[in-house]
Image 1 (cartoon, rainbow, N blue to C red):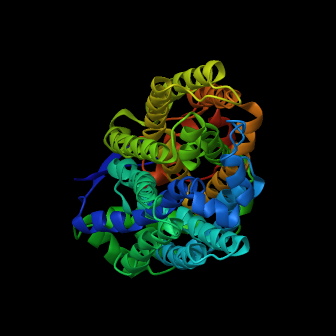
Image 2 (image 1 turned 30 degrees about the vertical axis):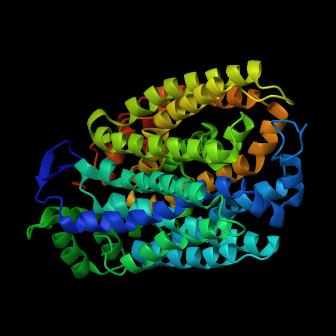
Length: 507
């Protein structure tokens, strides 16, 4: 399957190459970084709803949970409980900037290996935790692992993939995130009645994908771009031949050489990011991460068992409902893999805005009218309808803002600012994941059903941003974005006046 490469002069050329078994193996192994992240997202909410865990570390929450007249919206409102979930993302925010330097200097492969080691240390501390300090420190190490993995894996996938399959292969990262969430929900459902250490089993299993990434990354190659960028030119040519499955890779190799030479001219990529010429990529990457979190998705996925208990499901039923939403999440991400390089990025984002807005508004109306602060929960039929609406919401997110929030920032930066720019994207994602994770239960307590109207309002803003300011990047080679995307956009082209790149053939 040849990769179409667009030259700066507007000429199209097909580089020789095909999708190889080796590339598929590399993609699967690297995507285990997404499995680590997804498992943690799903496991946190389930563990924090388990009575054994709450009794040991958060006895005040345990008492509130079982108080007969407790406010339905506030039974889990506890800053330390939220800190258990959200401190990971604060650590990941800090780690992402360190990971950016490591990624550029030592390569994507080593960065992924470091991520897996951090994660394994975190798993040991949390699963073996004997006090709150130990599990918080464990979560911080998990955060370091997430920061390094989320920095390296999407870049690795974008650089190893042929342009016409970049979207599908990159979304494998998000697919593995959703599989991780589903697996964690199944594990939580299985361990919730394993007393008193079911929560330790749930947290300990997180070490499996980390170990798979650690061992698997020994087998995979470094990306040709990273090798050439670090002066390993002939090794880069050899790897390029291996991943493309052909001997003649001269045109693609020359274009990577040129991109690397341009990157060398930029001594401080973070300073270059502050210049107007980098404004479009930086603004879009940061906004996508903010919008991804303000859909409300991580609030729902973190605390799905808690949310379903709030509307009246028992603990087991709540965890089972989370498994259902996890399945929807996985299958909807598969839809995205099939559609993203056919329909494009914009149409998926815009359609999902409509779907998520309708779901959020109806959930808010039902809870506002039917779920009082104390007393009875929703009826069984109403509770099931809320689960269906949550699944509809998750479906829209999973084929749009979930995978594309990682794909688009990984493909729009030129090589000279790619690692630094993606570090801003990752850190922004982690910052706002931390904010939502730390604030959601308190927001649920204070805003009650209004929290769903809050997130629905953000969906409107996201849709407007996509319609007016987000260009289509489907099928455009990663190093051709400036000429083929930004210089053609009605708004962003004014920022490209300073760009002095020559018109060259790029991959």
